[in-house]
Image (tube, rainbow, N blue to C red; front, side, top):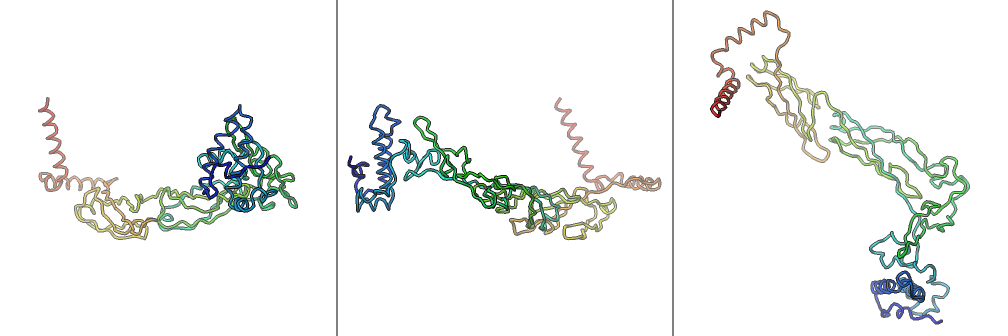
Length: 380
């Protein structure tokens, strides 16, 4: 039986664009697909004819030969339009469902499944100084690495994996479920497209072995809790020739004995003696850069905060260094001798009678208490 003109089969003009040809194919394939026409015995032949026409006209090189020489020019070189009637049906929905359905342009199948290696995470604990100024640390990472004996092939020395006979090396098989045709990994080769008949003694045919690798991690200055450092291609090795994953080093900063960090700023409590708070003086304050002298004015109250500029942290994503906030904590004398107690009592007695001048906070506090109870009593 003579073949019909492919342009006539798809009902398009000879100068039709690639998009017009694809649209016509989808429309006709949907209309004549055998699963949609179970009572039409000629539906399968029509669908094969449509598919064959599309395979030629959607391929630029085949179309050029066909336009010049007709069917005769493609004899022996064109792809067969036969096979299962469901082949190529995925082109109807290709843009929507992609890899869900089997087939593709030109009736091609899938490809062997290549898997990227898994990403790994490592929690790195640092001291505050290391986080603020940066450091370089050595870490040990247990992971799946490419087998050095077989170079990841899984085959023993002197042998190579053979093509899987179930999927013919494609790595995927088609499963028909009613109206649809699904594509899934080959159960025999697990998507690799290869079968290892003589496995490597080192990795037992897996292509990967677990070992510990020592890595050097450069920590930039200013990192904080939760920051992550990415080491590209230092994750687990891929499968079937896939690329390795990445390693993410997550920073955990240990608590410091003196300082607390809040972004780019630091804070600390500074103990000050009762006499220094009253009379004034100078105390030595520690910073990450060394010690500095902090002047305490006379009559400084407990809880007052002093700010030391540029003594904080320069964040990893910023250009301005933070500050150090020092909170004065007036210490109450302990373990007094009898003489010291007597002196303190005399000192306290000398202040009585003029509390407003010597204890402004105490006076304002008790005045507030009196007003509170007066208002409470009036409300009953």
